Length: 389
Image (cartoon, rainbow, N blue to C red; front, side, top):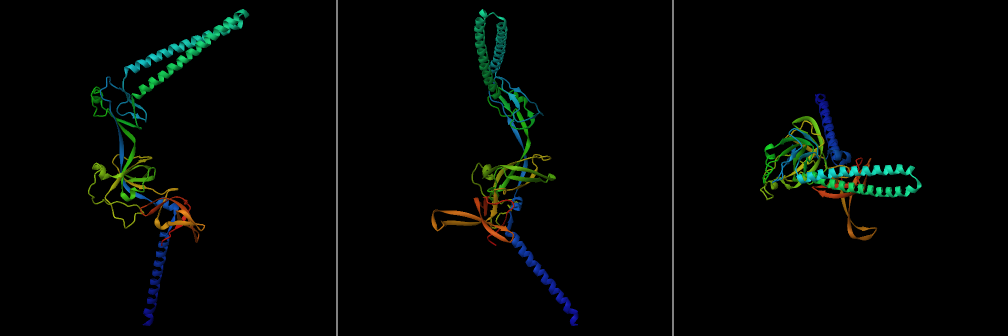
């Protein structure tokens, strides 16, 4: 009877012991992993998650009010245009007449210049066979012709400068596309209203080729966002594709204040959102949302209004956000046993070298939301350990 239960009990205890040991090992390993940080992995995995929409920018081009002449159109509906292409030009008869007059004067001056050149060439040939007594007369004539050639060239230069000024004035009367895009519409009815004292409708509407990102971030996330940060975008409307881009602008005014003319409004319950990966657990959710925009390198298959999930990467080379426990702050009042005139604050990280660690200086630019921004002293090959377990 004794043997029938002894070994099963022993086996059970051994198994329980192994489970406990494994649990302790896994817990220790997890704690150790949580207290070490690979900088390369940090730059890849430190992410701010936000939601946004793909938006199509439209360009609206209006007529000036109270014009005497209708505009000259350069495009029609459906045309593809590039940034800087002319859309329409205001007619100015005086400038057009001036341009025509200058062109005629230039033509006349150029003809006169070539005639002088021809006379010079003729006298040069004559000089080769002329008698000695005629050489002085020919030289005098050549000197006079040279001065006439110089006058002609100066007159041409003056007319060219005048022509440039007129062309610029005419060019200033030309309305050009502000970006690459497609002409969505040309309002013919509005074109005929060029004499109206007010213009309420655009005569040309452009659809810009590039889609942009229109998103919002909460108060905590917003403080980490900066223009030119890289981002990755996915959309439920275009499955299986990831788009890349950059942040462009970040508003410092809450969306609800913009909607209410910048007046304070009562806080409402926040919508469910994915927080920053480093957001402290003790932080209370806030209702305020802040608008940001970004651009996509490519937006194939996306259309206006598509929902977007945007991952922003706030940590990159020489711009690395670290949780507080990985940075040690030291206020130095003495140096080499001499009291400093002004205390100096130094910051250290604990770099890992195999089984050893070493405290090394880093440069801190900012301290926000429980994180330090390191701008110097860390590279992608570094691994650091937390000062606080």
